[in-house]
Amino acid sequence: MSVAIQAPVAKTSNHLALPRAVVSAEMQLTAKQKRLIRKSFLKIEPALNLVGTLFYLKLFRLDPTLRARFEGPAEMQGRKFAAAMKLTAISLNHEDGLAPTLKLLGVRHRQLGIKARHYRTMARALIWTLEQSLEKSFTRETKHAWTALLGQLTRIMAA
Ligand code: HEM
Image 1: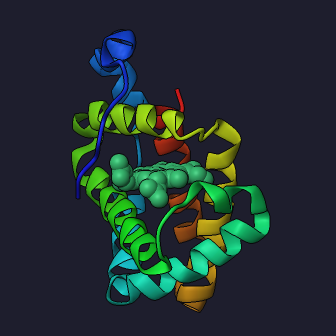
Image 2 (image 1 turned 90 degrees about the vertical axis):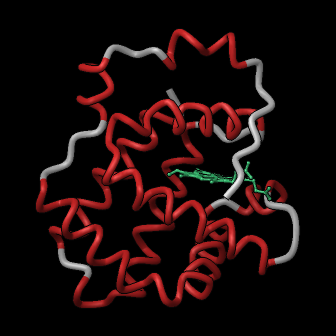
């Protein structure tokens, strides 16, 4: 996965150097929540492209203006969705170590015109997609864990 960063990074360098305690507080999930997220991610992983298609259908239904921001064929979007989901899963293992990378990705997203409300819409679309894909195994606890993770990623990326 390549993350192209073209932003004037110097402008945000103060944010990148957040004190460790602050960053850690942003990325706190219990061991059980991480286990639940990993378990559900492993279930959808073999069908990530299909799950991605469902996700985009829901995202564009919730906010049709977002469609114009995604370029290229649907197949490429599927790959980008897979990359984003893998990064999300990887972020579980790295916690605060990944915060600087996520902040840079957030800068890239700001360049693309992605605002805080878009993260909320994305979270709604993703939770809905996981509900549809995982059915009964998407328990309340698992849903809560994903919601917490997405909230934390949003706080870091959209800060
Ligand atoms: C958990 C939060 C998110 C993660 C981990 C994530 C991850 C990624 C990654 C890895 C890329 C590829 C980066 C690149 O090509 O430079 C990307 C691109 C993109 N993301 Fe996100 N993203 C997130 C949230 C969002 C949200 C909320 C939106 C808008 C609703 C969004 C819209 C886009 C767009 C428009 C692109 C470029 C797609 C293209 O080139 O066609 N992302 N994202």
